[in-house]
Structures are given as C-alpha cells and as structure tokens.
Image (cartoon, rainbow, N blue to C red; front, side, top):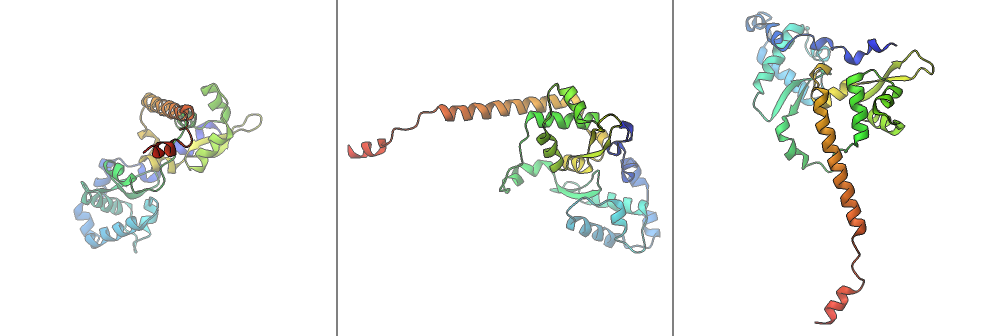
Length: 244
C-alpha cells in the first residue's frame, strides 16, 4: 500500500455535506410530506443515541426506522434534535464515527472528580510520536525516528495501539516492508473531531509539549526532594512524650 492511499485521511461518507447543507437536506414541509410523526421520530433517535456506547453512523440510525426514512430526512431530524439540546449540559455532536450525546466540555472538571482512576499521563516521547503520526500519516517507525532523531521504542507504539489511537493500515513497498501507521476514527472521536481537517495547526502543539516538559520536570523534582528528605529519628516521639 502506498502512502497516498491512507484511509484515515479520507472523509467518511456521512461527513461529506457541510453543516449548512445538513439543514437544507430536508425542509420542515418535506418532513411533514413524508407522513412521519416528527416528534416521535426524534424521540426514537434520542433514545437510540442515549443508549449507545459508541457514536452511531447514519447507516445504523437508518436501520432504526421501517420503512427507511432516507439520509436527507434523517439528517434534518438529527439537526433538529441537535438544536433541541443546544445550551444544555449534554449536547448532540457529529464525530468521525457518527453521532453521539456527550457532556459539554466546560463540565468536565466536575465530572472528573467522580472517577476513581485518573486518565493516563503520557510522556513527551509518546506525544511527539503521536503528533508525527497525526500530521505526517501514513508513516513507518523509521520515518518517526528520522523526524525525532532518536529511536522509537516498541512500547510507545504499543501504548498508542492499545489506546486505539493508531493502527497499521498497510506496509511500505521497501525492503523489510515496514508497517505504515495512521490514526483511527476512535482517535478523532476522543478528540471530539469529525475529520483530520479539524485538527489544530501543528505549531499549537508546541505549547502542549512545553506543558508536558514542565509537568515532568516538576514531578521529577518532587520525587528527588522526597528521596533526599532525611527520615525522622526513631523514637523521637517517645522521647518527647517521656519528658512531659
């Protein structure tokens, strides 16, 4: 497979229409002309999306209705449902894999307090490797090493694959046929994006990596300080109490 055939760079079929075109796919009059109960149809979609674990693509949502409503009508129903939830703590969004309900970003700090385990923190090496794959995909491990100037451990690649953010999409037609890595729809879903075109400019990531360096330095300094701190003399508490 050549570098130019990376499926991760292709826009999913359900994302080919611009947002402005979604509303134009079916007017309110056209919805009424279909003879469907618009209010009930939106409730069905709402129930399907709220009960789903993962984003639902249009192909799956179309199977909910019999007879099939068709893409234009379904797009209009989803746009109306999205408007119904506008301004609430939960919103309906369109991602790379389909549609889903999710909590609004501004409420995440409060929701994080309920989690028993914190999200994993990644080193600069992992984030640099991911950034290279994101912005230069498809790439081989050798490509990543050429750009970073250092070797890339198998553990870094494995951690990104385990998270579901990258996958092997083929092999380069060169000696050894090295694996070609690219990002997945799951990666875009986790970032709340619909396609790679919505990614921020690469220059903006430098600030993120600088914050990672600062956090790593602070964590290292704290660990060193704890190691160097002298232990309290044994029996000091007893000696203090005996003098009372």
